[in-house]
Image (cartoon, rainbow, N blue to C red; front, side):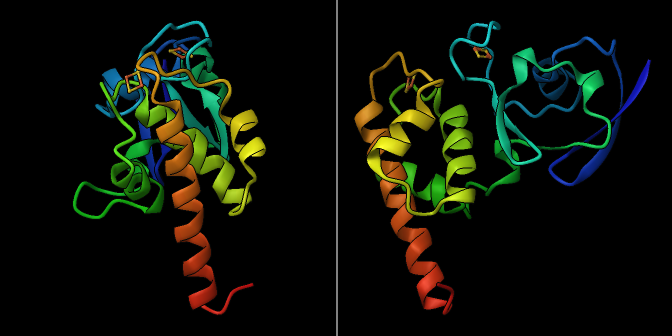
Length: 162
Ligand code: FES
Ligand code: FES
């Protein structure tokens, strides 16, 4: 059946069974390949995207449940030429090894920083727990999120926002 879905501010009509995981629709129908298939079972976080600002596993989200919701993927953050602050911080800290987990990591980190630009290390660790990195770059990822927090906080104070 034809379903309507909004991704990164653009509306799309897709032919899909409503039970199809959002991840498949993003990758196969919309050619948004940032979110990755890791486990397909909600156990790794490689497929993390935002729905209405919350980090979710797109492998477990049926596309039929998204009428009227806002989906955001890593493609909706920045570009290679103009990475957003979280992407830039991950680059600067060389947080990726193989890179497979990184889009999901960035999306989960972004969801945290969108509502709290100054999380504690403990808050970062708890928030990031659902996402796994098989390369073991967790400490670099933690540093990248701290760096992103610093960038965002500096931006806010230089713009006069408290
Ligand atoms: Fe979705 Fe692993 S692919 S949680
Ligand atoms: Fe390889 Fe995280 S960088 S899985």
